[in-house]
Length: 66
Image (tube, rainbow, N blue to C red; front, side, top):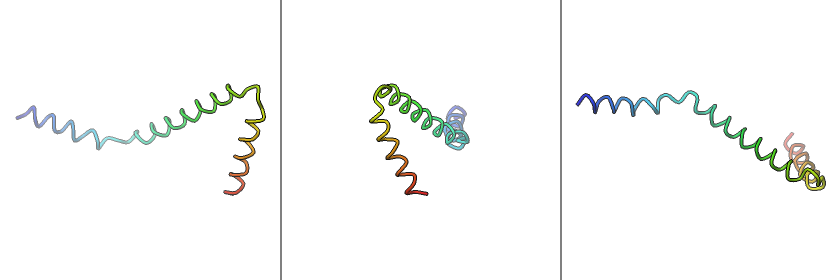
C-alpha cells in the first residue's frame, strides 16, 4: 500500500511543478525561428530577389500593424 501511495504522490506532483515549462516552450520556438532564418539565408545567399521580396512583404505587414 505504501508503494501505491508513493507512486500516486509522484504522479500528482509532476503536473503541479510546471514553473519552467513555459520558458522552455518559448526557447524552443525561438530556436526553431533561428534555424529557419539561418536555413533560408543559407539557401538564398546568392539570390537577393527572393529575400528582397520577403523583406518588403514583412515591412508592409509591420507597417499595417503599427
